[in-house]
Length: 214
Image (cartoon, rainbow, N blue to C red; front, side):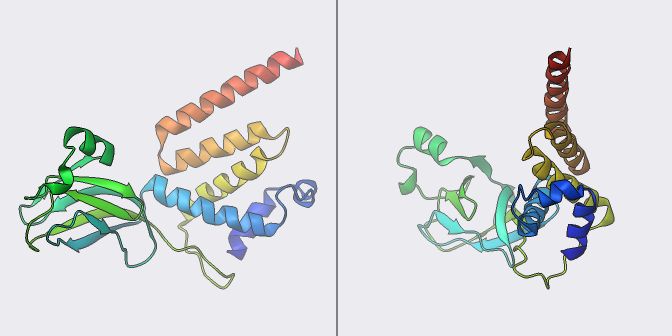
């Protein structure tokens, strides 16, 4: 953590650092944790397959990874038939099948209720079968300075870009630098569409600034 923080502060001028716009280095460290979360989720870097035994007349199951917090569900497979379940939502399920909670049978659909729960439809009438849930995981945050954060060199630049973008966007007059850093972060995780949109905002910002200066 200390090394990443030093690398970030090297990019910031002394005056900007002392301006305490973000309070203290504690906020910088919090942003580093935010950056790691964003990088992991956007880059889909940490995935775990959870195996959940099905129970009779039970629709809702908790997602409990070995470590960390569930971030997104990428897919669900019913292992008994080796078939992928169709993704839906509770709203769509309720609209199409108002009495879905009464239905039993071989599972065909799933819905994510929140980051920690999943709904299986229909539910089995006997405790038979199992589903596998491919889940993107956000690792637990580092609670003390003693934790070592292992970041690949190729990913480190993206983490730094994200933190600097947040810091610069909080400073009046540094919006352009913040947008540039955020676009660089998006490029590092391969989110081409979001990068394109961010650079379009940056372009419009530059045109407005140019018009105001003429």
